Each structure stands twice: as C-alpha cells, then as structure tokens.
Amino acid sequence: MTEFLLSAIWANVEEHPFHLTEDDHKQASCPKCTIDLNPVSPADFSDVIVDRCPTCEGFWLDHGELDRMRDVVKAIDSGTSAPSGDQKPAGWSDLRWRIYLLKRNRD
Ligand SMILES: [Zn+2]
View (tube, rainbow, N blue to C red):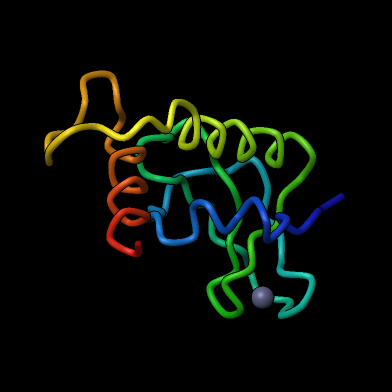
C-alpha cells in the first residue's frame, strides 16, 4: 500500500536535498509512470528512506515512511525561535539551519 506524501507536509522540505541511497527492502514502481522508484534519504536523516520517482519526482510512501517524514518535518519546524546573526545555533542540524535560511531569505 502506497500513499502520496501530502503536499502540505512536503512543502516544508521540498527544497531540501535528497541523496540516492542503498536500499534493497523492495523494488517498487511509480503508480503513475510504472518505472522503478529510487530509494532516497533526506540529508541529515540518513535513517529515513523514501521512494522517489525519477520521472514525475513524486514521493511514494508506505504507512511507516509517511510517519517518518512527519517526524523529519517536525524536527525541522520545532523551536523556530530566530537565531541571532549568521551562525548556526548549537544543537541545530544542518537541515534545520538550511531550511531556516531558505525561509529567511524569502521574507
Ligand atoms: Zn512517476
């Protein structure tokens, strides 16, 4: 059973880099394009593996993967107090810092 990641959730991490990763737990195909999905991990969350279609760039998640991505988004969004200056605050992941800068540069 696959489920497309909700766009409202995805909007928070859509500009975050994903890396191809090794994953042999399944060989799934894109329900739209019928070509093989690539297993990818968001940077800073190498333990989270989701499947992305190289053609339509859709993310196809089973139930556990959706929960993991929700956790990732929560980690990005938690404690959004603005840091002072251009130094990454201690305890912030590179991912959270990058998301913060992306949002700040848009305002
Ligand atoms: Zn596709």
